[in-house]
Amino acid sequence: MRPLPRADIKVGFACNNRCVFCAQGEKRSESGAIPFDELIARIESVKGETRGLVLTGGEPTMHKDILRIVASAAAMGYRPIQIQTNGRMMAYPKAIDALLRAGATEFSPSLHGSTAEIHDGLTRAPRSFAQTTAGIGNVTSRNIPVVTNTVITKSNVQDLPNIVALLGSLGVRHAQLAFVHPVGSAEVYFDEVVPRLPEVGEALRAARDIARQLGMRLVCEGIPYCFLRGMEELAVEDQIPHTTVIDLDGERADYSEWRVVEGKSHGEPCERCAVRRTCEGPWREYPAAFGWSEFVPLDALFASSNSPSPNSPLRKKP
Ligand code: SF4
Image 1 (spheres, rainbow, N blue to C red):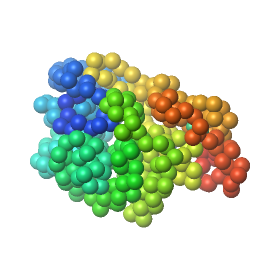
Image 2 (image 1 turned 60 degrees about the vertical axis):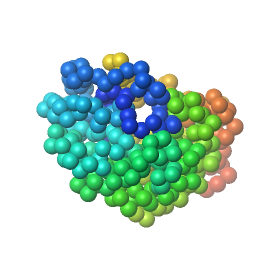
Image 3 (image 1 turned 90 degrees about the horizontal axis):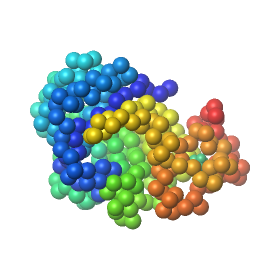
């Protein structure tokens, strides 16, 4: 069952990281933070449609009015209120406490490597690894819901098992691994950033096994089922809540629809695939660059192997 709908409000694109894969690219230089009154009007505008709110950016903790924004949203009755963050500000316990007092209920920090070399190399922000790992530990120690995000790139594919192990040691119980969406900076640095999908499977399997050992919930986004053979339970797409996004310019978008209609795509192999109606397909920029030859329809795979696992999408209703 899908979780309840949520609104995803971008408060500004300022960020103290400069991730090489950032989907927002250099928008930070094009626009400043949204003024408090305007943000409150935007949050009010979706009140009838959702009770769940995600504050994102950029880095939402860099907005000078973030505490007032959270408090106002809480007063409007929003719950949960999630702060989607690079996690660096969470290194300061007072910042977490202030956000919790204002009404934040969840945090979604991002960790992209198990070492400073890998993480800081991707964020292009020295000391971000030290702050983010300290921040994650500070949040988990307060026993509030945390779901981490890790963007899968060429630089960290082999590191995925170590990242999951580190997250587990920091007290994380729910982690997401998201295949890089090749837009924004990731489009600019495509060759350095985007791994080939067949290369991800082995590391993902090892990461899955570690998560199981640690009792963590691990999910992944942006990896079609044909690259998740035997790991179909990791796919999170059918559990993503219906999301309304309000972008910096105030434009509203139905992200759930956009993701399927515009963000992702299907190709010729998909037309012969048993899960065509369940699978969203890859981010469309991937086959645009590499073609469809890596995509092997699931019925062909399963025809030469055993029957589908209990979690296979082949067992789901079409
Ligand atoms: S529908 Fe296409 S992308 Fe999805 S699993 Fe089947 S072949 Fe792969």
